View 1 (cartoon, rainbow, N blue to C red):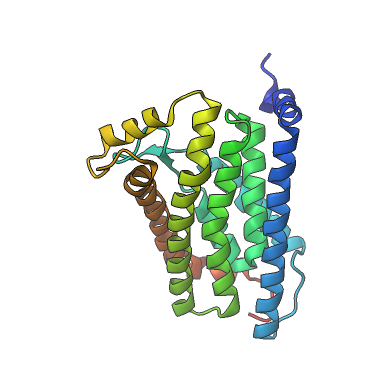
View 2: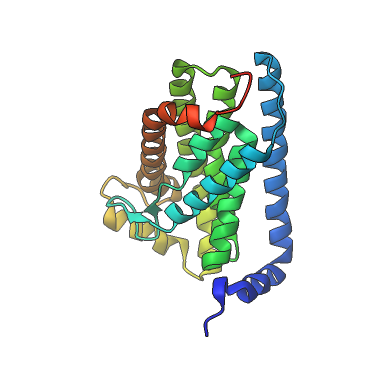
Amino acid sequence: MKEFFNVRKLFAAVADNALYVAGFAGVIVAMFVVAVLLEKAAQKKRGVKEPIFHVRKMAVVGMFSALSAILMLFEFPVPFAPSFYELDFSELPIMIGAFAYGPAAGVMMEFIKILLKLFIKGTSTAFVGDLANFAVGCSLILPASVIYSFRKTKKTAVISCIAGTLILTVFGTAFNAVYLLPAFSKMFGMPLEKILAMGKEINPLMTGDNIISFVAACVAPLNLLKGVCVSVVTLLIYKPLSPILKAGRRGE
């Protein structure tokens, strides 16, 4: 009988990559500390004082994290990038939850989403892809929710989504060029030139043979598309959901 969630394989992968996993954990802790500090600053500016986590918030965080993990399983190919780049909408529940409960909840949901994914599917990239997913997801969720936390108006919501999308596009594109593509090339023994050739074959907008041309033509549009889609749907459905999510809260 197949072992449920492949727990043994996951723990074996953790043991084999202990130093990398420790670094991964350090990134998560750093992101969470930054989120808590910024959330406290936003509460102080708005004259609101409430715990970073409470029972209702934790329940919603758990529910939205699970929904995000499910959405992460549904990936869609895009016509302008190689097949290993796919679009998913796992950040949508997290963005809504972070708007309602703050950036610390957003970072926590990103972490739980990755954790659930690891238990369900394991890792095929020695945690490199999982760290990338967490970092790139936070590059959208963290700035957007921080800006919205300081002033919760419709105008600020639009500004925060635009800022989050732009930061996601710039950071995600640079992260691929500097770290992710070289790491995958080394890990799978595939020359970087071959990866770049795959991009040039599928995307005529990639005019050069270098990594900058690749990420500009293939990665940046993917990140921009994801940010725009998540932002638009969030702006459309957050307001109707807001009274339910904020029920019983004070200071809003």
